[in-house]
Image 1 (cartoon, one colour):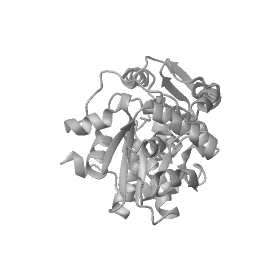
Image 2 (cartoon, rainbow, N blue to C red):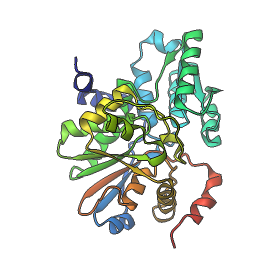
Image 3 (tube, one colour):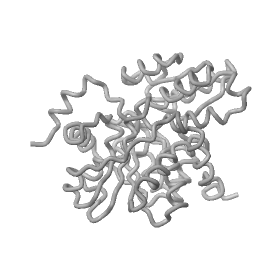
Image 4 (tube, rainbow, N blue to C red):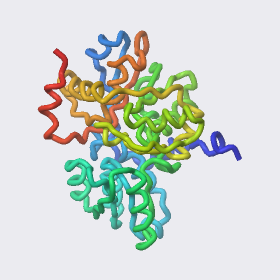
Amino acid sequence: MNPSTDTLVPAQAVAEAARNIRGVAVRTPLVPAEWLSERVGGEVRLKCENLQHMGAFKQRGAYNMVARLRDEERDAGIITYSSGNHAQATAYAGRAFGVPTVVVMPTDAPDVKIAGTRRLGAEVVFEGTTSLERKSRAEQIAAERGLTMIPPFDHPDIIAGQGTAGLEILEDWPAVQAILVPIGGGGLISGVAAWVKRSKPDRRIIGVEPEGAAAMRASLDAGRPVTLDAVDTIADGLKPTRPGDLTFHHVHELVDDVVTVHDDAIRQAAALLFARSHLVVEFSGAATVAALLAERWSGKGQRTAAILSGGNLDPSLVPSLLSALPD
């Protein structure tokens, strides 16, 4: 078996995920951004995943996977590891199905994400600052307690659930020519590409990573998944040190390009989204708009959808956002 092609999530799995999450996840709007369209010289619309119940797209994949578990797997309780958004999404799914949920979070997780996870009834355990550290701790707890793992990105059911965002974009804007997707572990872009490239192969899928945490770009350059020695970015949701094996294969086979953006561009993008589109978007979610503003990918003459992956911004950062606005 060639893992780069034969293990790709089929479009049918994304369609099934759309049925599973109907009435649970928000069908988020695709909002025109005239100020951004004028800036880049092409029509831009924003896929507002920051408006999900949990404030991020992660609800799609987590709920889809928990819904697809066997009864005995689900009833045993579930566990995950996450910097915050997948933590809340898994906690939400656990509460919806009435099962115990444990989440391993980094010691530097934003307070707003910790509070949100606990508010949904999950037990929070803290471990390290990297995705590999919390993954190891979660696997240990899962083995000790017999819990079922809900990984943050590298699983077919997670990828299929995230792909429903791409399904909605094509349904709401069939004429779209390019879709910009932020990359952390790669689950969102894998799912979007799995649907879009099967439905409309000529549509371009562009991934966006922070310069200080560009694990997918480094992996593509190396021709295999690689682990970064360290990551440094304000975009806490885009900080995995290594992409998943399955997500790497999806990106390698289906994605047109992966570009990187500087933290300054991400901060300015979040500020402009707040000021001009009246949207609260966390730094991870603003990466796609940063790529357009910094011309790391040109939207000139294109019909471009930019996914805003999350809105769980620490309220204390709002004053600094305003100071980041350009003159």
